[in-house]
Image 1: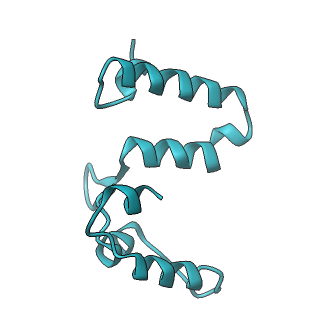
Image 2: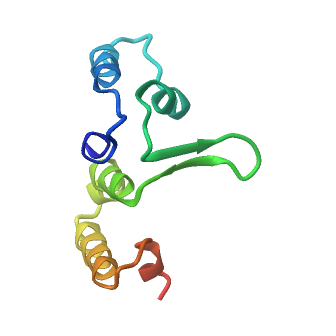
Image 3: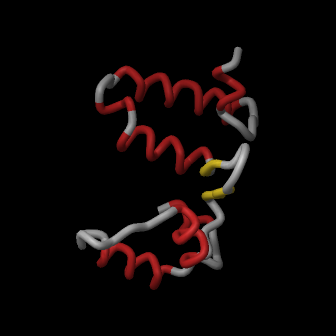
Length: 101
């Protein structure tokens, strides 16, 4: 998990609590609750106009491959891998820069 590897202040006990509660019908986890409870740094959530939930590129790509379009179209895995490795080679901070070319 990205937070465990990259965030020394991450609270793994809270993560385990969420993990244990996740199967219950009453369990609801918002991005704000996740960030506040676990001290997460890989996700940012802002309310209001121009707000939204944003994630570090490694988290976003992992989510995309796990739950996104990849499940419908396996060719997307190759596209994502190609563009993210190209970004890494060029020392880009944002892999999306590659998609705009």
